[in-house]
Image (cartoon, rainbow, N blue to C red; front, side):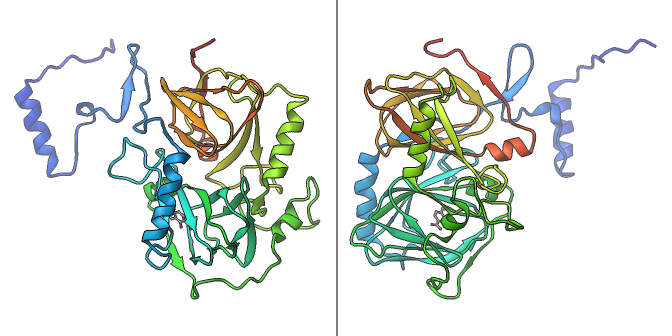
Length: 363
Ligand code: 1HN
């Protein structure tokens, strides 16, 4: 028997009638609809991200955060957060398909009440003279450039016991958790948790370089270290820069790790710090993970999906999944430092991580 692809041509009316007849059965013809994919001339399919590249400038955001603090209290807004919404999504609060970024402000004397949720969150501190987030009873310091984790289901309240506003970048996996319909949230019985642990306890236990308390590590999937101080991060980057060229795509890049297993800080989010040498221009690549960048210090631009995004200190920009990107440090004298977080652990865990070089603006 010869096997061939069959050639059957029904009329448009017959096909239409057939498809209508399927509707009341909650059935539809796969061949009749194209999903959110694009087909190359060769017929192959690859992701066509809905999110677009975008940059939010600190000079625009800061006055709006201060204005928000005049308009609503932390009674009115459980979290006083300006959402950095991807312009391609008017219907959802997302920054990329899986990640959320926002700017949160807590004024002197204020607390943002204690709660917990299955969304994992990180805080990258932009402005602060030293308030804290209480994570499961431990006050975690928040100074500019610090990374603070509030993992899935950890109780957390934010407190500003200083005389100056505290402003930080929030990063959450909320779009992913909502898509999985796995979002749970609870209020703590009181507004604030008692301060039951020493300030910086997780740093003392798990932030001592290659040493950690002997014996069984805590049985959790996230980093037991809740605080990564900027001074240590920049020092690590600067020292490595003396002996290492870094990657052609990312410059010198280091991952914040879970000190127990060396993996990402949380199961759904990985955090990175990178250093671009004066005048450095990276090569273009793209990957199936999406990334949100925050400029700790520097002056430059990134070409993301063909758009040039100019950035300077404290700006935030997004690189959607499967979107080409490359970075330029415009300073000829100073390194640029970028913080970023991404959903790469999710893609990796599900065997969906792909990466490829892309012809860029310069080789
Ligand atoms: C949240 O709980 C916080 O706890 C910040 O500070 C931002 C964005 C979406 C959903 C929950 C916080 C959030 C959030």
